Length: 260
Image (cartoon, rainbow, N blue to C red):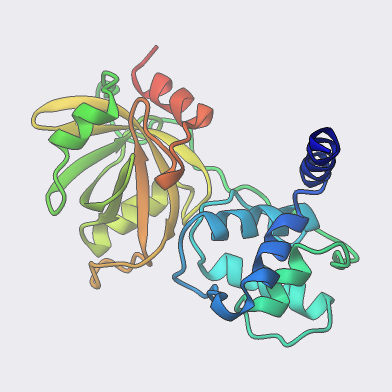
């Protein structure tokens, strides 16, 4: 009897591994009364999984962040239109179950948005500024929340000021002023971008190699900068939000910013 139960369990477990997309829908159905609506401003693992699933279906063309912003909302709207359900840009139980179910319709034609790239040539005079790698543990102690720091783009050598507003495993930052945000956009080719750039952050007089992710997301605290949300700065061994994942691309940007 025990062997039969164990065999049944293993079969169910194998089926779950083969069809992971079914798990969220099943769990949601079992807890229908406690379903938590996903809306602009929602954050966490469920949003991350939602973005990855929408990417698989062809509606989401960017890196999953775990943050429900305008781009995620637009992807949800496109999914709802394609699947003939109520279009409101939020993910309630019906939308969530359909997204993770086997009956989800894909777009008839999916186009990838071009990845904007900032300039790679030096735009200012003088010697190129580089920094030394610093573990996130030490960088976090040096980069205090509420304080302002200078960031220099490795390629263009354009500098701008940012204020640290938070961050878990990395630093969330906002441009300190509208002029700083204008220089920030110049670094990314004139607009906000999903590009990662090698940068040097000045911490207590020391130059530290880091990586800057150029797409503002989440909420903003500096209303006069014109920046809609915060950007992220990663140091050596930084983690992607609460998921404790390192990012090879950020590590490569840090290497470049160190001049090696």
